[in-house]
Length: 340
Image (cartoon, rainbow, N blue to C red):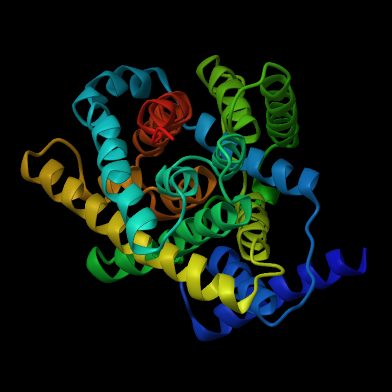
């Protein structure tokens, strides 16, 4: 219990520091930075898994609440960029596996599942079953999410001048109580139903689907308030930062540095796709960057919300990426695993 309180206190200090320094996304990047520093200093930290997942469901409701019939009709036009998602995943694997295996000396299973831009838990599960180094996989994927989430706000602000200081919603006091209750029910019920049927990303996708149904039927008429989105950012940031608890100097020198180098490769690949899509006028560049940057699904949702991007466009591409990785990665790994 003490470790939990210390973790929340450290994350809160991170928020205050970012607010004081005027840095972007204080509720997300503040906890990430503070918890990362504390972890590297050897502080024992711990979050509450159930609470962290519940906070992720807020993002699912926020996305689902934006769905309208007109938006659904417009989604048919996304196919020109959606078909590029499997191509990006293939290229990431083509470059990433040799990078980890030949340059850093990881075994094939660890290299393969380190390169795959899927969800952390899924890649750890598949990697462990294939005989990979679970600790290295955990640090590499945590670093991938952290670096991309930290880098993108500065790219958005510096390149496009996106104002990331705007509130992500209206104050809770201005919303009808009945709508707040519907949001809570959509978040919790959607999460548990999705979890019961074994859906990947249940804490986000379940609430998103249920909230979308309620929104399309006219029952849900508002997005979650600013306070809820800030809370979601806080817990997501804290979760990312605490992934480094117990990290050793050797792991930093090898696993974390290797992951940072891979993140540069990922950002370059994403940049190439953004430029190509922009060149052919297939989609707006900011939405394309958020859609093709292989960060965590929850973290990309936060950035899309704050940046005022087209949520449906961004989330559709990330869901497809996760589906492609989850369905394709184990099959491809079996096909390409070196024979003894």
